[in-house]
Amino acid sequence: MTRAAEILPAQQASPAASIEIAGLDPERDYQRIVFLLSYQLFQWDVERSLEFALLNTYAIPSISGLLSRTAEFTRRARKRYDDTELLLAEVGEHGFDSARGTEAMARINEMHGRFRIANDDYLYVLSTFVFDPIDWMAQYRRPFTDKEQLAWLRYYQQLGRRMGIADIPPTLEAFRAFRERFETERMVYADSNREVSGVTVDLVLGMYVPRFLFGLGRPVAMALCSARLVAAIGARQ
Image (cartoon, rainbow, N blue to C red; front, side):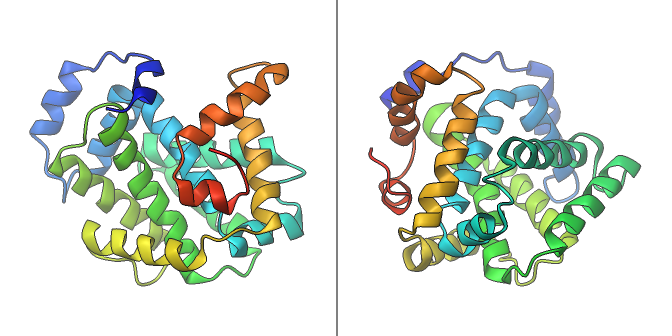
């Protein structure tokens, strides 16, 4: 573990949840496994990792540029953040085929359907939701098992299909290779990256510290980011 892990809060794992996961099939029971990981075993870690997943997406000019042009995030940052978190939680807590999950997916698709978004951009966002939690857990807490990683992938593949995303890679290896190629080609500095990511970082910091401590909090946040991401948003590590 890195030194950053020393400042993360301790979490009490649920023995019952771990035992239940051991008896589940990641191909069939992926929704249940992801629920147990996200809401009973590692809720704090999953939430934090998904915050950084969103930050990664804002380091892509085609994504940040759309948000900047439409003011979809910069003027309504808290609302958009809350909407995203609440809708994904409805699906995660109640299941894709539940009444609440179905309604949440319809709302997610309605929100995105108002904009022309390239399939590769959708795929990249989906890849961050797959790998940022997996990588966060490996670095700061305890690695997901192979079974947990497969369930995590299957869950987000299902989410992607229900959003109409095409050409979702079939394996973790293929999906990670896509993400690496995409970031190598597309994660480059743009003013819109800096604008949207700056709003995002301050929004998240505001959940934990008073505004007068933002100047101290930003370097801590950047220390948890890749050098490529930091350069793309014009920040310092």
